[in-house]
Amino acid sequence: SHARVLLHPGYTVGPVDRRVFGSFVEHLGRAVYTGIYEPDHATADEHGFRRDVADLTRELGATMLRYPGGNFVSNYVWEDAVGPVEDRKPFIDLAWRTIEPNTVGTDEFLQWAEREGIEPMMAVNLGTRGVAEAAALLEYCNGEAGSRWADLRIANGREKPYGVKLWCLGNEMDGPWQIGHKDAHEYGKLAAEAGKAMKLVDPSIELVVCGSSSMDMDTFGEWEQTVLGYTYDLVDHISMHAYYEEHSGDRASFLGSGTSMDRFIRRVVASADAVGARRRSDKKITISFDEWNVWYLQTRFEGEANIPLRPAPARIIEDVYSGLDAVVVGDLMVTLLNHADRVPVACLAQLVNVIAPIMTEPGGEAWRQPTFHPFATTARLAQGTALDLRVDSPTTTTARHGEVPTVTAASTWDEESGAFALFLTNRTAEPVEVTVDHTGLSVVLAGGYRMVADHEPAVEGPEHAAKVAAGCWSELEAPVPSPAAGTTPSLTVTLAPES
Ligand code: AHR
Image (tube, rainbow, N blue to C red; front, side, top):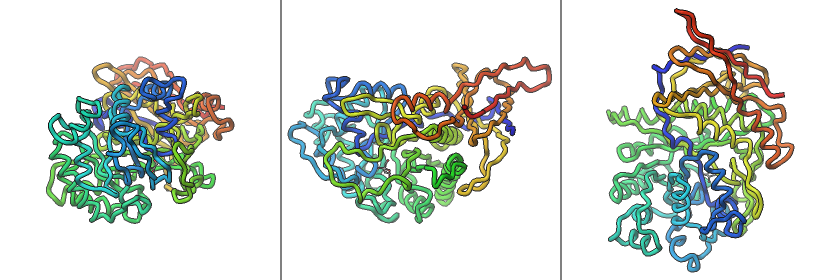
């Protein structure tokens, strides 16, 4: 079969915000303890953070990290995790039924992120706490000397404000599982008041209001409209969360997950714009897609309530990924790039050990899962501006999403450096020929996410990951013929599964 992609540098979606290559570190399972932080590890730095994990995080290209949750944040008392470590008390984290030691808290995380050159994105607890605690945390992080919470930070050894720019007003507050879950009116009012107070502390911040936990929530749509009704003029972004998995061997639907993500984005944009239109506002709310990934949530996870109460670190949701999962992750990134104008912020959930591209063994190795590779490749190559492509593709019939394009594409171009990238996905196990018409750009290299022969993780760990990585992204070189006068320069590549 055959697909055609048409691109031109004059037609653009918008600049690619580097924050779209974010990830997420939650106090969950082994994300923090024996993930980023393990003082006894051979590679640990003077602060107790694993150098091997930090190096992989750089290689992954994560530009931003969301912290400290996730569900965790909704029963978190941040004040208990600052100051002298020996004075900190453990508590029962109700979200993941884990005894959290509070050894790593706001200062440890923010200083690690700063040393690694990664922008932090913080969340405040609007589950069990409220306006005062949110404003106090912001003052602790960003305040100048001379006020109570900023002075506490200074007394704890950090003079300079952290200058955290991005703030989430709670997490998944529409979800009945959330500690302190609220209906849309309760949450919208609280978010508006907390956000108002926070912007009075530091007007330079950007705020993210909670959207729906997934497109399948009963309250989806209604929730967005209601909470934005309270917060439209105050917030900058609305959050989206989505996890995809293969259900009962339905590979076609799983490979079509990007189409579901695309529809989800369009619906949230429509909901937000409808609120703006009613208010006759020119302001555009953008999206913080602050949790997205492949997660075998319904097929492998037994639910928070079934987690036995244990001290941290506990092994929780350590999904092992396949080449198939990597292709889907690549395709989801194609989808995000095609919405560069409305999705400036996104976080692959999560970074280490918990549904993550990076895995570790306590006291042992750190390695890359197959999903690491499409993320790292895209983060590295997607520069400048996303182009507005026309893709004419055959379609595949899926049980969950109806007809979906077989080939998807995204492309970026950086006028200054001349860097060009084209990302293609073949969502089937059959070869597809793709012709790219690239009037106005000289294209010599394209690349694609495509199926690999062994879909399942036969071997867990580094060898398997390396084997699969070779197949999930391939750079496809195609000679560009000098166009004869009046013709369109084009190249043709074949996206065939690896054998
Ligand atoms: O990323 C894992 C969990 O998924 C997060 O804590 C929560 O926000 C979502 O339900």
